[in-house]
Length: 223
Image (cartoon, rainbow, N blue to C red):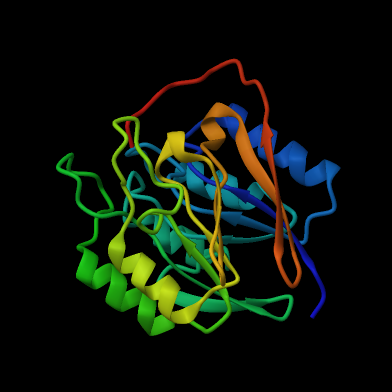
């Protein structure tokens, strides 16, 4: 199985500047795949997501985030990019995923109860694949500003059961980083809207490099 070079990103939140940053990164490095972990907008329409999907020349795999409207799934499917509640093959590897996030009391557009999220992800999971979610697994790059874990225990159970070689997520903006277990490398590339993304060389193991680009606009959010 040949190594894959992945551009991993999340949480663009409607930032045209962040999109241009990612497109420049795609053009200047030899990526095989772009993986996007949701929150293309902040309660916006699907227009911006359509623009994102049409901007990349590299193959894109993506899930929606909790701030994306449900119709975002249709846009991702129409572009051949969706891995929400399904699995796809690329470069000899199976990618499986599920978007959205657990209800948090703020009435976000794409919230899913944990039992549904866990059951749905498990139904498409594949042993040793690549797991793509918006929400992180509990304890894996999920510490909020208050110092509490913001991840999903259900997603963690799926990860422990199917042992993906790589698990990509976003959602918790302040928890960018890498956490390694015996079987899985968990990566949160950080919010693209603040200039963050990651480069991953995925072979027998995942080698991760984090990038931060200074953008002129940095809007803080709590989700």
